[in-house]
Image (cartoon, rainbow, N blue to C red; front, top):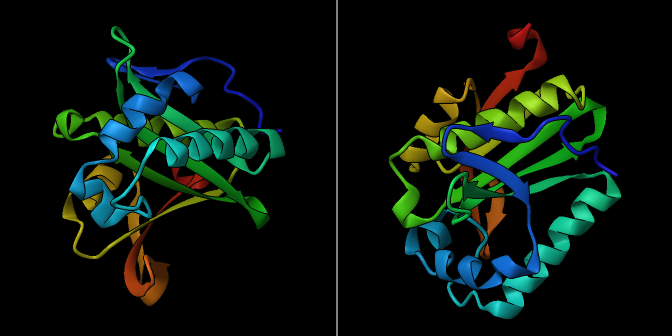
Length: 180
């Protein structure tokens, strides 16, 4: 089981918490955005069954100890703003993926959420390297991870299979040593 954070993961208006079934409708509404379906594995026909399966997989990720899936919510309102997920890999490595609802973009929310998860993983879970893979054309995500303390580490040509096609990716990395 992935150890829950020792303290709440919160920064300003951004609060990270585990998913629950009460999030399903808001999750479907957010994932109807074309920018989310363009850059992530979320299908264009995302529905309540897919959202319920996602919430269930997030619980399994926590329970199996393979990672942690967080809903990004407004600290004051509880409104769903997005998602950030940590996957633990062998050798003390991890990967982070994220998306934001359309009306949450441009406010630094993704940067704060990615930074919170990275710092928790590096500090408390003793992960030594975390990577984020982005599409080379997804400049907004590049800016998010760079502001969250990640540095460009690699370009992988046609390394990710997404929605039936091979796509290249830019890899950003952050290490524990850089945080000491």
